[in-house]
Image (cartoon, rainbow, N blue to C red; front, side, top):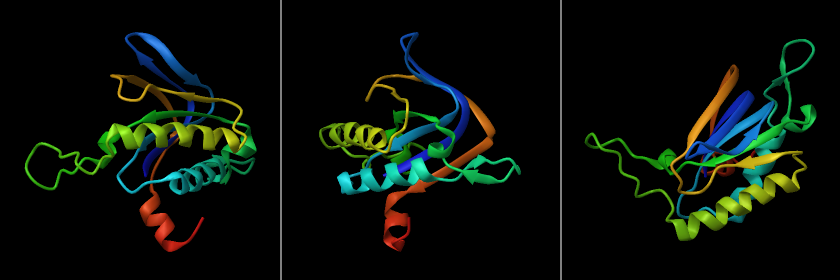
Length: 155
């Protein structure tokens, strides 16, 4: 699984001009799923994101997690995170999981985040044409890949 995670003051996703999900302060997560991902990847990533210390404390140091600030999370499926641009000018998306694999894992990941105690978890709609609005805080933007992190055996 790959994610682009942004620390936000607010974020929302719209489908056909209608707000599908919105949050206040927290994390905007663009989630990509590849073949070979499973529930273990979902649980690991949910835990990692909820406890990632990227919010500032009283000394202006990135020392607080989403859980510490009682923040919210917006999760949007993003198969293009597995786009391969190495050859030619048109990305290949063969590494992105097919919907029959990705949808159940996307839904499981959302539930895994909720089980971590996040007070509000909002979502887009898998496969929909969405417009995402992000009020990035910092800006702070990070990319995480479970294959790289889990290989090292670190949290």
